[in-house]
Length: 352
Image 1 (tube, one colour):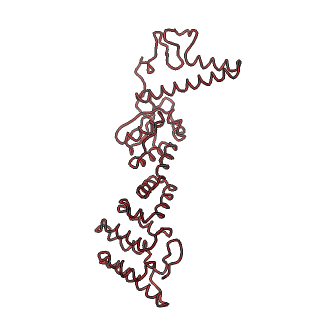
Image 2: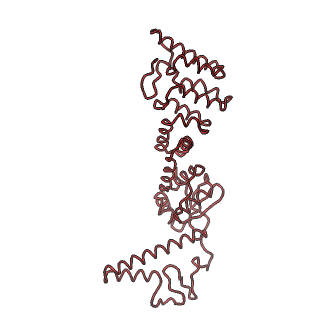
């Protein structure tokens, strides 16, 4: 999803007669980029401005060889630096801008040339409008502060302070503007995963539709489930994400009873609202056939408030019955899904 652009009715220009650069001399000539030095008229004279110096370097380079080429290169770099600094000053003063970014809590302006230099998306879409047209960009989902931070990065190469509270907005705003360098920086931040931030980073990657990043973080969660299940973020995990984690064959745990205790902790955090989800989580997330029957009695059944639910009680009793059938080598079938449950790691579950 990229930002919506439209022509702006707002004219972004200086007042009639006003020199936007602030370098005019008495004869009306601009003494800014490419103009004459102060005190010289339109006739030019000896030295000329920056443009004259660069033109001279071009001519001499062909006649005098490497030394003049070096001189030209230095003057060219100096010219680029001067132009860059001038554009930065214009932006900081919000002058001569031709892009209006309408944000959640205000507007901020920029220059088409700067955005186009960093974003092929902006470059392509700006070309669809008349050159003299100012352009509106709708970024109403994002606060001005986020957009300003991105523009400071483009204009000043100022590294923005990425943190958990702003990374989602930075990635999404960068994506809207086609600033893939910004998006990649956000992805690098999310991939710096720890036990404490893994679930939060997973949620951000999912929200930003970063599928590869999300799956990378998900693998980390599966490998470190025991520690992650003890963090505060685990307690507020979305039920669909919890079920996805618990039902994955690659979930790394030392025993299935760890999964049961994590599940109980999550439900108990908001028992009234989450109890209706308990039967589905027990059936689809927990491998009850991987819990020895003595532990079903001594540990699982001891959580009495959970099995006050009639549905949960039926599930537990069926698991105990299936264990009994297997112990007796009975040919009677177990109810689904107990006859199809798999070991963590992909093997077929069996009574040990």
